[in-house]
Amino acid sequence: MEWDDYLRQQAATYRQLAEKAEDAVVKTELLDLADVCEEVANREWSRTTIQRLLNHMGYDGQKVQMR
Image: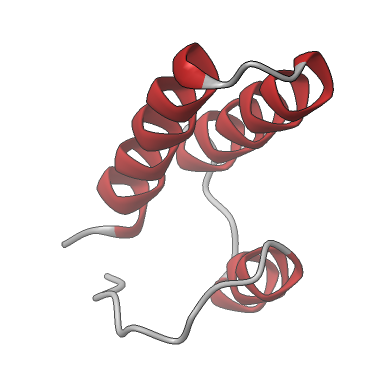
């Protein structure tokens, strides 16, 4: 899976979770995460920048193929 596809998939997941969230703060945070994922997916970032962002977001370490 390409990084941009992975990040767009994550954005979609965050938006789905936001729809179900009852707490307004949680909903806002999830939508913000989705926006960040979309923004990164739409830019060409270096591997280091993407890795830092994913680490900051609590990335669980599953391997995602980067090209």
